[in-house]
Length: 61
Image 1 (spheres, helix red, strand yellow):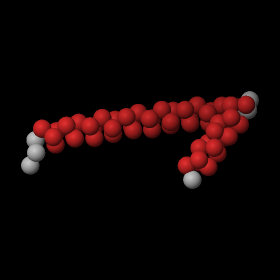
Image 2: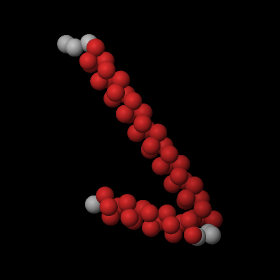
Image 3: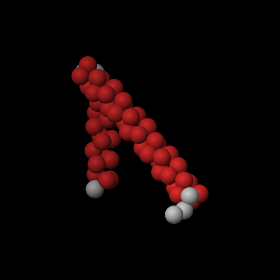
């Protein structure tokens, strides 16, 4: 399922990248911002989980 979603996303990005329509360019910009935000949020979650795991290892119940 992830392969199909990834392939569809790549095909869509190639289509948007090849298009000279202003709407397609705006969509590409918005998608870039969304992906950057998701990567940033994912990194923050990983850092918080790591901090929580370190806290739990230093302060066992």
